[in-house]
Structures are given as structure tokens and as C-alpha cells.
Length: 126
Image (cartoon, rainbow, N blue to C red; front, top):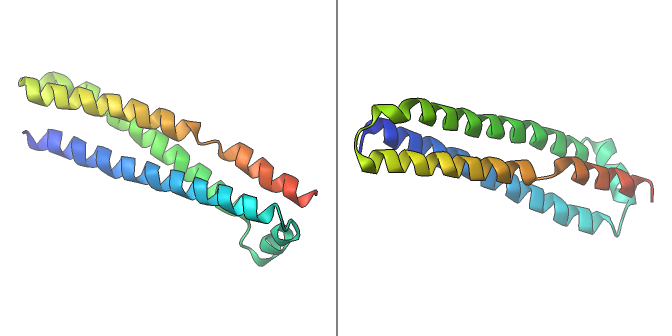
């Protein structure tokens, strides 16, 4: 397999791992929300200590945008370079990566951090 195709595969795998880690962080925050729902006064204490879930979510939103943009950029590069490859195996591999980029981009977009942030805000008002 061509070195360029291998680099595309590696770049995709790196981005996919970042997307998975972002989702794991999202799931952890959902668990924290469930725990804090039983002790809403802890949210304001976390805010005062500088360990606010809102700050974490804001950081995650930035990461989400970067990962989303990177998937879009990678898919664009693949589309641009796809015509340079002549073997079916390489072309099929690039098509698969481009398809996976779209799937992962949709997955990243489906992580609703804004709603999660609103959930934490509402705890403060209980």
C-alpha cells in the first residue's frame, strides 16, 4: 500500500481516537451530573473552586469543533488525492476512510454539549 494511503489511515485513526475520548468525557460528565443531581449544592462549590463542569464543557466544545474540522479536512484531502491512485485496493481504502470520516463527523456532531451545559446550569437553580 502506498505511503500516502497509510498516512491517511493513521490520521483517521488518530482522529477517531480523539473522538472516542471526547465521547468518554461526555459520558463521564453525564455520570457526574447524575451524582450532582442528588447534591446540587456541590455544583456551586465546584464553580467557586474553579473546577466547574461548565468550564470543562466549554473546553470540550472547542475540542469538538477542532475534531469536526479535522474530519472534514481529512475527507477533503482524500477526495483531492483519490484520483492519483490507480490500484483498486488503494482507491477502496480511501473511499472507506472518507466514508468513516463522515460517520465520525456525524457522531461528533451528535454529542450535545450545549444541552449538557444547560443541565448543569439548571442544577444550580434547584
